[in-house]
Length: 250
Ligand code: G
Ligand code: G
Ligand code: MN
Ligand code: NA
Image (tube, rainbow, N blue to C red; front, side, top):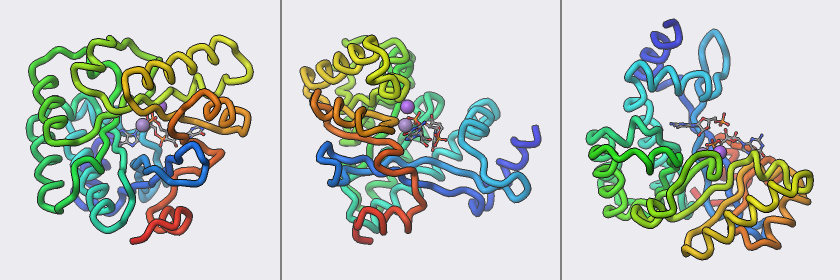
């Protein structure tokens, strides 16, 4: 209740929301491939709130479209004013069902003159199994416009390999629960290896999330993972700190 009211106010003013950017590295460990945008809320009384606290409320209370539009706009401005190759934005299944949301994404890129291939949308596996017309139409329009799709938290849900091809998914992001168990669990190793092989066989990119140790990194690189993301390389950073850390030009 309280969060809902406060979130409405935050969305009206826009002044309490922030985007942070976590660098995603090519496997040489030096080249910045792109970044994942992550929303934060500077609540005037409660301090910084993580998205887990308010995304669910936004989805339930019909505020997720507005939140998603704010995130998209901010990420597109970042794309327009920097030379970063691409930015990945998380979108909830609720947003993808909204015709208005999909229109706004495409229109935003057009207005700012941004190459749509520089925007990646991170969706979860469940989205691909949603056979509603609205979701199918949304995904197809986004793909036709040239926007990239990445499957977030891959391996934790139910995927149909058929859907990976049908929607032309560009990238799999290996869930950090598997990456975190590399070196401790042979099951996790098999899962990680299998996801990498699957992605490569289908000509998709594959990113490991939650890379926290050098051992994990070395395993992933040796197995042919394309991109690395995690605290070993960098935490999510505010825009100015991100540009400074990566040396990407504004
Ligand atoms: O950054 P952090 O680890 O706190 O993010 C927690 C969760 O919130 C992640 O699952 C992430 O996908 C989600 N999340 C972060 N930013 C956004 C956003 O802008 N939109 C949506 N829908 N989810 C987000
Ligand atoms: O669900 P999603 O993949 O969108 O979640 C991304 C979240 O993972 C971000 O909120 C980010 O803060 C968090 N994250 C990024 N790198 C690491 C890491 O190395 N370890 C852990 N535990 N979390 C991470
Ligand atoms: Mn994500
Ligand atoms: Na994840």
